[in-house]
Length: 107
Image (cartoon, rainbow, N blue to C red; front, side, top):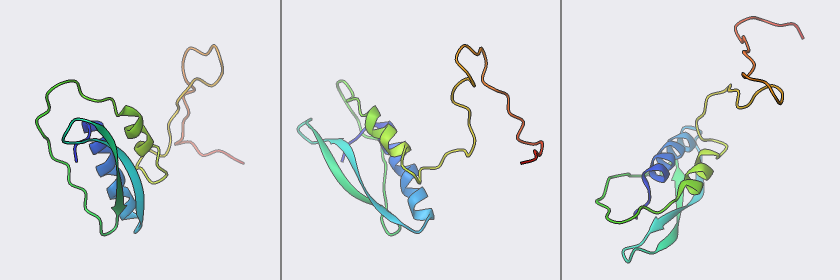
C-alpha cells in the first residue's frame, strides 16, 4: 500500500498508542493503487497487528491526504501533550493566557 508520509507517520504513532493500551482498532486510510488511483484501505491496528512504513520512489504530484492524517491524529488514543492553550482567553487578546500550572490553587 502506498500513502503519504504524514498518513504513514500518524498511523505508526496511533498503532503504537493503541497497542500500549492493550487494544486493537479498525481504521481506514487513503492509499494510491498501482494504477495511480486513490482508494481506501481498511486496517486493524494495535495489539497483535504490525504496521510497517517504508519510503518508496514517487513521481508526479503527491495526493493531498492531510485530512486523513488529521483524522488519525484526532483519535482518542493518539499521543498528545496533556495541556495546551490553543487560542487567546478572549477575543481581542494579543497573547494567550500564561497559566502557571506549577503553583497550587484552592478549589
